[in-house]
Amino acid sequence: MVKVSANRFVLRRIEKTRKEVETSTQMLRDKTLKNLKEIFTAASRVAKGQVKKQRIDRKMVPVSLRQRRSWLLVAGHTTQMMRSIAENFDEKETMLQLDKLEKLVEEASSMGATR
Image: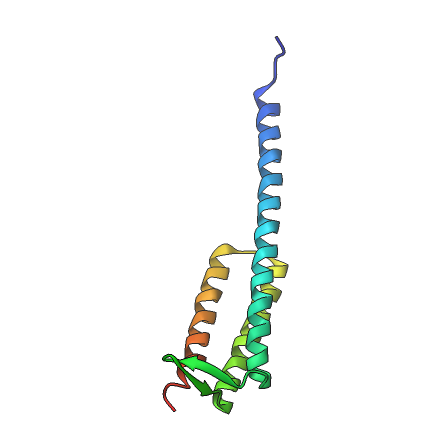
């Protein structure tokens, strides 16, 4: 029977866990950045005027200049999130930033309904 010290056993488990967390975190970071890139692309298309109409209350309405400005804020905030996540992935901070981004999108979309 081979004796393994508790110290070595625990250190191996710590290293194994560290590698799993690093791998999981990197996968999550990559997936999050991919989704944010798609959000940025969509928001920047609206901000640039490439999207002429949007659906609000089941009706297609033209995108106003005011809405384009709001979508520019959405694109800018998305860029800041991407930079932050690329540097250091913090789940709680990311969730807070996503909440803020969601509010910006809702705000940008609702402007067309109040015209």
